[in-house]
Image 1 (cartoon, rainbow, N blue to C red):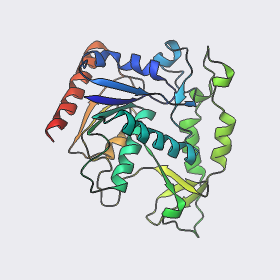
Image 2: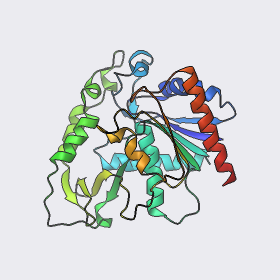
Image 3: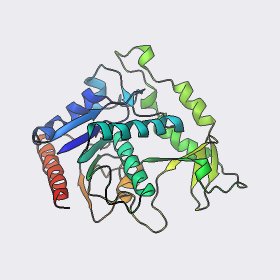
Image 4: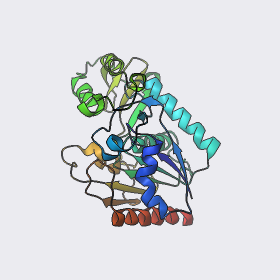
Length: 289
């Protein structure tokens, strides 16, 4: 089994290798390919791993307020899948899980009747909600409606510009810190719009940004076997730490494992061995499909 691995927002490959080492040890017949983000980020200073383990710069995969950055990342990942694949599965944590889901959801949206997907299964750990980025020229937009963008920009600020994302990580040089002023300037340029199906979104004029949602017919956007390793403690207060992503997946092919570490990475010897067994079960089940 060959697995593509995507770290969380405000992390790096060194951290993600450490976080996954315990369950990967029980899956030593699997091959793991780690892809590191290139956009500077400081998120994660509250986490045991990012606060105390790594002194390397922290990264994310794209600027969430810049459609060009998001689309470039999707293109880069598609190239990696072609050049270094094929991959059997994809493993993502937090923002990395969202990126994995974006690739899978877009593939389903673009080719709903395709027999093959970019991966045969996916493992999401504390999966954040995936972003949808689309060209305005291809969208059915209600042009004469003014949409208040404040609720959407407030959500965006709370997610990407929360206090832990604004801290300076000890041991990391100033040039390796994220430019928060640039993030805010990009966010302020986005205007509220609405699609004919009622979806509200933010736009810079050429592209639209919103979260992926299930279509009106309820057909899953991720229609392959998935394993969701997540905490349920924030399901009511913030469904975008795993529950929303779960709902985008085929319920008949989704499995869950709940842990007690909140949005931090699950840990503990027994828990990791259980996770390893679940990953193997999901992966091996796809060999008979």
